Image (cartoon, rainbow, N blue to C red):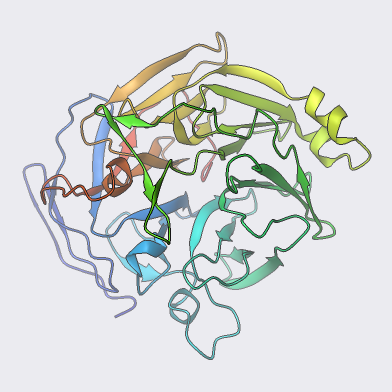
Length: 377
């Protein structure tokens, strides 16, 4: 039931937490294979997005493929789970005017408002973005997404928001070749599709996603196999909102562009494309996050690692690696200055592969980083 606080018991380094609401946590032992990595919880359902609330709670969207009862949950540090933003919205009550369907990207702005990207893929409803004032428990805004900002085959993955500069960026990997960034002017609510088909947003031909030497593929609705969604996926803003960092999942390059150029509607497509900078090398990744020093943290999918691109060198190196880092995703900073992320082993395996129970675990990890970041980034 909502608000129920489960009992807890600690034995050595064991943490036992039981949650209700269809998103129960399981017993977990925190064993650090890398000195910096520490398990926070085990999650029985696969997450698809995460940010942090101002009070330190984890806000986690559940993969629509799990058909979860609650689309998004708030998970306290003590292990208490409640539907977010409330039961009726999270569970898509039939007579509720505002409901969640399939939430992926999530972000927290500097005012404590939670932004949720609902791609609508669970029941094929139109995509939207919901801004929820978590502190005052009220709806802030709904942005309905449609053409021409979107395509019929749009596949929305991640968001980055800067309320000071009134810009919100959506990563749309689409079918790959028509991937693009969607730029939303928060002052007007209008969206524009930019950089469609540019090398900074489309996957690299022939670059396969290999994990443990096995090619990862996805299954289409008709049952055929295809390369995974490889267009632009990770997007992140620096603290000042000056630069947007982004790149295709299936690419070995990270790019950036100044947000002033993205906000400038007078720029032609060619002019904007010429202002995109190749920033650094990167592994195949699904999520990035920046700290206060502009170091970039990367979810290294094939390496089963969290990597670091130092601002001083722009060189990539592995910060922490662990066999349990199967499809690390959802990178964001907490109030304690540490980096948090989850894993999703089902995404890290070829279709049809059966995992032993001990391997099919969705972890929530925390990681000490060289510098701290803004909560929710």
